[in-house]
Image (cartoon, rainbow, N blue to C red):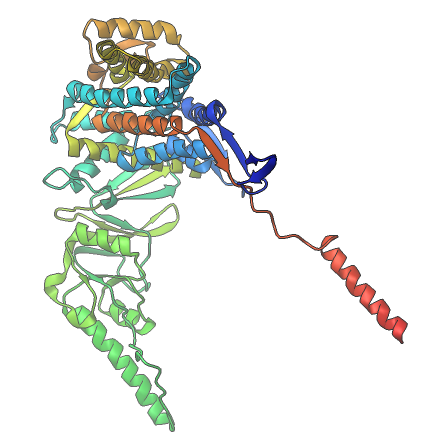
Length: 553
């Protein structure tokens, strides 16, 4: 980048920097964003295909989940990275609909390109897009369907919609039951759901059908001593965040031992201290001990003798979930041990699953934390099932919080598209063009659903529009039967938040990319220069010096 001053160029940017401006800059950014949207577009819907992603060390991920695909892809272009951010935001806020959000953002940019070619200024387009996005939010609230928190039937359907197309179809009835049961258990009375309290344990082996819910917790550990019982019923449970071992001094201290009997006394005292700690645990009435820190060998022996099942080095997150599941307080000091701080579980048992020992804490009175064990034939199946569960749990939680859902299968998008066209006509002016472009862009969802199912997108769109013009707001595309149908009746429903968030973040990303008219890229910092000829050159130099020495001799 240089400007002329009296015939003398003045350099402003560093050498090697590149600058792209105006229409070229917009064209590049839009092309990059469209490329990202096209990468995930084929995964949308129940008939969507999967992607196999292989990373630099050869690890394979096979998935249908938009955000997982974009996170695993090594994306370099800055505008393309913004599209990944759209997917991440959608994932953080709702947990599902990541592909939808990215595809809408890509289509908004594609439509804006046509307007730019007609010399509509980017500011006009962005203003129209913002108006359309606001109007869309308003319209969505009007077509939302109320959901009662006790209505498990509709919650199951919501889980089913989220799981469809993610390799979980084979046993979806059972899996959706597990999801709804888990979410309704951990839901608070005001409807808020912290999905952190549902622990998903992945185990390769068995089949998808073997997946199960544990009304309590599963800890991927084994008891510390074989002499301990492997099953305790009506168990009083202690959660301890302190080491059950000999307490070392805080400061560096030196103990001088001069005679053998002093050494014996020292060892006896150490053992007595450990015994007093274990006595406190035994006296409290606890039958099961989960310790976040270590348990000494001698302590293990005493605990085993007292018939206590103990587990050590339990993760902090697991301790917190155990606290919610069993009602036990987490005790941070040995001196603070009291019987009143213990929790309860009907059964605590060590069982082997796929050849690995795990501790099951079951039959808790009113657990606010539960576990799901996900099983499958191969590692990739289990990993993809785990992602399907994550999405389903999140969307059921979102519906319990918002108590609103919408029909699926492209129904809300078709409805919005029609209503936004009516709105555009009332706005008039140049903004009308942008609002109409926004309306057309939303039709990419039913169109893609049709394409991915091998149907004719134009025929399907025409039929859908006709139904919506007659006022049938919940008619969407039933890709299984290859025809439009009432999605609410068919049980294809999604949380309202999936749509509101997808449209809001897609519009924001499109607006941000459209407003860029100048890309100034710094030169990449080069690696430090090596001496000529690399290391070899240095070796040669050293040899030369040696030669000079010889000459001197």
